[in-house]
Image (cartoon, rainbow, N blue to C red; front, side, top):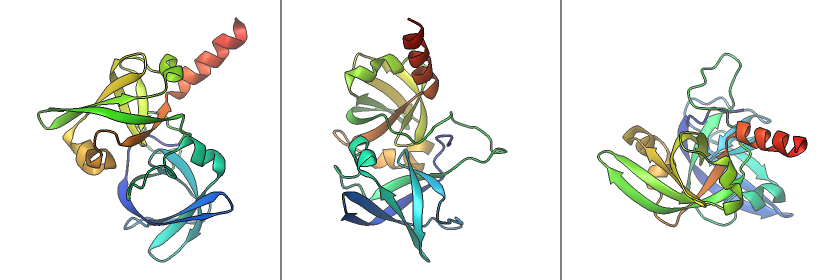
Length: 195
């Protein structure tokens, strides 16, 4: 489990495909004590550490993960990282599982002073999970939804977030990982089961 508060931007040093799986070698952030088996939220995706080197570590993405993410569809070099929460950690964002629901696309960026408003398009079937002022994770970043359409939403990024995550490096038509609020998904399932 994660909070959606990115702790580091790192580099994807190497990509390797073997037996339908993708192996990502990622530069280890300074001061991070990473061990095999650790879960790290990586651009919003919960990835398990497979192997640790002196300056990097490697994760393995199975075909199911590749189907739901952009790691095999786009060649971004920088990556948002957040280690998993401990029971005594502050929850500054919202509960994020690291299980990506959909790939979104940035379709508009509007500057507002030092901040920027991003308009992000997503598959229409997920519209029921997006509400104004609700939580959403974009590339692992905990955000509050500003406005909503039938297949898009907007979110405001303050200067700190733009400079301390990869979102500030992304442009129109770039892809983002989306994880919709876990409470909305459970509520939807409960209502289906009682109707």
